[in-house]
Length: 419
Ligand SMILES: [Zn+2]
Ligand SMILES: [Zn+2]
Picture 1 (cartoon, rainbow, N blue to C red):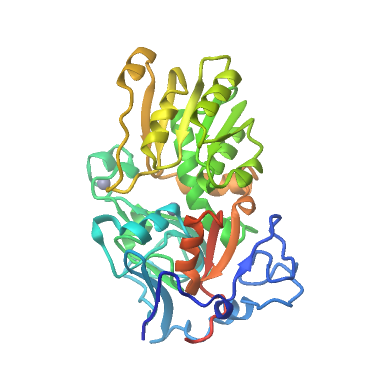
Picture 2: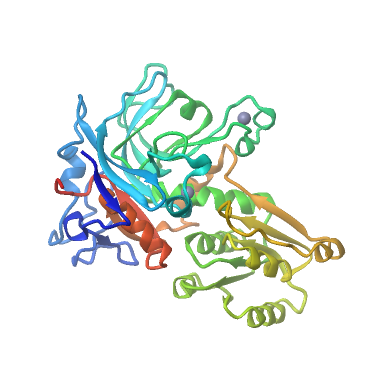
């Protein structure tokens, strides 16, 4: 049954690839506008291969009742297979969601090449999910069939030392959809009771598209980080990283009132330039970066340096660009095999610099992100460069790694001929 798509050798002509125009509108040449509720937003001329009918009628295999769904299964490093598996049952006390969009996260890229946490394999990955509740178990409280939900992956236990203190992101028995439980690279995802009680499922605000709702998960972590460290009016913030997360940090810092926002990056400086940083720095020239940052901050360094790349030397250099009493944030984990940073402890000591990490988000994280998007403080259309069918998941991951895409959303209902 399985159709192995090793090393992303998918067939893009059959799968259909959609490039999203920068303004989010369809250009009629293979791109399309964002879909809302499974229908075209009307900006397309219908000339491109459309996913829309399938999205409405459930597709060929997506009907429930003993039928199969399509999913992308991570089998091990650089090995992703498109499979058809039974549509999951609605769990006791939980809900079943029809996935309408699922983002490919930087952590999915890392998992694809380096493996999942704990060496898990044979798993449906993907955790930036938006979809429709198709069934809610009796007593599953907040949701009913037909509700639109945004999901985030973290599931806390509710009982450990940290959970009892409300620090759900630090839970000692922390689990994630897409790692410990099947995730969103699938047409359906089952949400066990735990997810509804100790995880993240939030109503999608009216009028928000599926892809924008799925993007909220990425926003949650960035927002939570800057809230906690307190980026605020008048601050200077240096963001290391020109990928979607780095750009998001820049957009959020600006929205929170930072008066100087600098982005340092490598391959995607052009994208980062679109976010109009006060300085756009090329990390390949560390001395040049240093000079420019110092000049722009009167020779003292930045209030906040946020490292959105899992690179030890970048972290070390970022520390040297913090002012005294400044804050260095290690955002984004490095693979276990990577070299860890050797931070200058004297700089931290004499400069009273705070070095902190940032992982996941508090219980309000996803709701905060959805309202920031709804309010227009964060604009997902600036990040989403491609919407691909599920079949193209591996290829999407490769594109992200090569810097040829910014943010990719998978549409599990895009038309995909049988292999
Ligand atoms: Zn993510
Ligand atoms: Zn816990």
